[in-house]
Image (tube, rainbow, N blue to C red; front, side, top):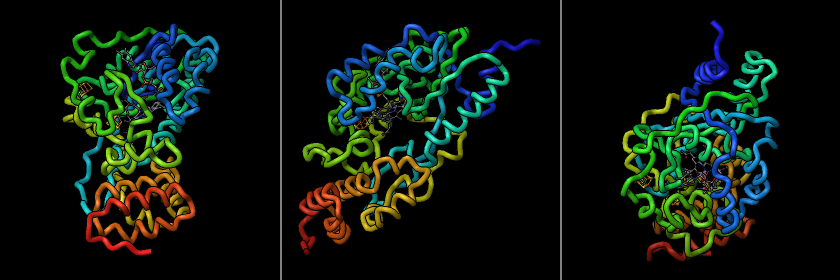
Length: 350
Ligand code: B12
Ligand code: SF4
Ligand code: SF4
């Protein structure tokens, strides 16, 4: 029996470890007005690439001429958080505990497209995960994979939001899936995420000012982190999960079927003393293949110093003094700030 293209795509995606597959019509592209408002308000901060990719997001024909459908893939990454080791450690957002999903998902998407080119000769594809100019959550919402919560995350009722998204644009028409039924598509009276954000990054429901978000500050932002925001960073040395952790949809996330996203030793809680004392090149080498590499050694050391300042433990003094002689002024600034916040009893040397 001849298989429909949508069935072939689902079957191939599932065999490659992507069982959550939903389809949306490509026209008109979703989310563009919200995206423009985000940029117009400057909420993207230093993420200039969001401006550069605006036109392709608004018109996906620039990515794939004749695009008719978008296939949205959801990839679960939830694993239980390893226990808090205490001491001079900082928290890492769950998505970064294992292998870098960018590499892993991109590799499988390339394979998927190769297989589909054989299965469906003449059909055009364009794949995207994270850094390519596609508004993934808006497509996922339209395809009925989940709904967008007040915390801006794509939430699957009964599963939660600890999942990555990827999109495959296709230049043939595929039967679209319906959006989730109305009753499943909203947060109701809940506002926990908005109240939980320690840096007041939410401008309102479904609206984030990235410039205040710990995830942006610790991963994307270059240079010193504005001082008034440093205390709110608390123990987050890379990314932040607070607005997801408080969400009732995330209380029992199913365990990811992908062992690559399981926490690697020492990656859910970073040893901050070691981060500050390790040579920059060695630190970056140790983080090859991990999302933790994104801020570079300087960014990670800056974050580590800020968390140590927030912990206030005098035991951090030697590592902070060491960081204060780092060649990059961003690390020196963060270390000096942190030294000033250590609990009384710490001896200031040097
Ligand atoms: C830039 C970016 C960031 C920025 C800005 C985030 C933001 N909220 O805008 C920063 C660095 C802060 C960030 C943080 C995080 N990110 Co991020 N990020 C992106 C990226 C590359 C672009 C997002 C974007 O375009 N933002 C601009 C705003 C305006 O767009 P948007 O939030 O996507 O919202 C659109 C739709 O949701 C829709 N929409 C919004 N609200 C509503 C409401 C209704 C009712 C409707 C119908 C539609 C709608 O319109 C919006 C604009 O078009 C995407 C990947 C991608 N290519 O899409 C990943 C992505 C959104 N991030 C992701 C993740 C995992 C995170 C973090 C959880 C990481 C962490 N733990 O630290 C946090 C979560 C912060 C948060 N609460 O949003 C995942 C989200 C998975 C999910 N389940 O939602 C994505 C999809 C990456 C991926 N491929 O998996 N991120
Ligand atoms: S990721 Fe953290 S800082 Fe960013 S909006 Fe959510 S709770 Fe706030
Ligand atoms: S915490 Fe509540 S308001 Fe926030 S996304 Fe989850 S259900 Fe919606």
